[in-house]
Image: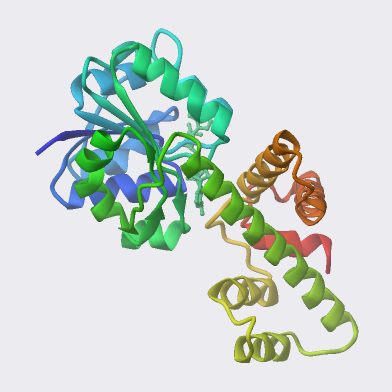
Length: 286
Ligand code: NAP
């Protein structure tokens, strides 16, 4: 069985790496804040001192970090993945980034002799824990085939989407739609409640019609209970909206609704809700 590396043990990475350990893979982990490795080590993972040290000993190294800046930081430099990857080894970055960042990482890895796949995911903390993520893979097809047994542990579906950029763009489109839905949902809830409607009655009516979806049900309950325990940090959704709007700029595609949604999430960040769940965008509306 392949030796697997995992970089980035935040909300998502920790759950994904834990599932790989539980499935019997030989996993070596690294996280910037090394304390977050402790639970994985207790469960049987090895730990290495740098991303380079992980890539040096693993057949495939996976990464799940915050944003483009973090994804580049763990790949580049004297302690980065590119410095440790050897001929034929694989690097799979599952972080949500833009296509330009993904291409930059792909170039650094292939220049060093490695193979690269981008594989951002759709699904939040619970699907990561349950191993039911949707994995959006693009890049080196031989690495996709080699990584498939690990994808099967982390996700319920892992389509191969083609060239580098196709996975990143698919992920940004999905999250742009999700952010927009959540923002207008939150405005609707706020308007309804201000006009005297019962919040639960609004959720029940929505759930009975063509707009029924798990997100309105789950995030709606959080809004009514004023409990924004973090599954998907609000700051990361704002990052995704910013990257989607930038992609629209690059392609000359007007995105007026996404741009307004990005501003709402920026406002929520400024109001102090960056590390709360995305549902906390409701707090600027209510
Ligand atoms: P998170 O809990 O905030 O974890 C972020 C991870 O990135 C941590 O391991 C953090 O390390 C690391 N990191 C941040 N800046 C870094 C840097 N400069 N150098 C090295 N490591 C750095 O985030 P998350 O929710 O797991 O999300 C991770 C990625 O998945 C993001 O791209 C997000 O957009 C995407 N995503 C999240 C969800 C979700 O529902 N949560 C769903 C789909 C996709 P430290 O522990 O040292 O800070």
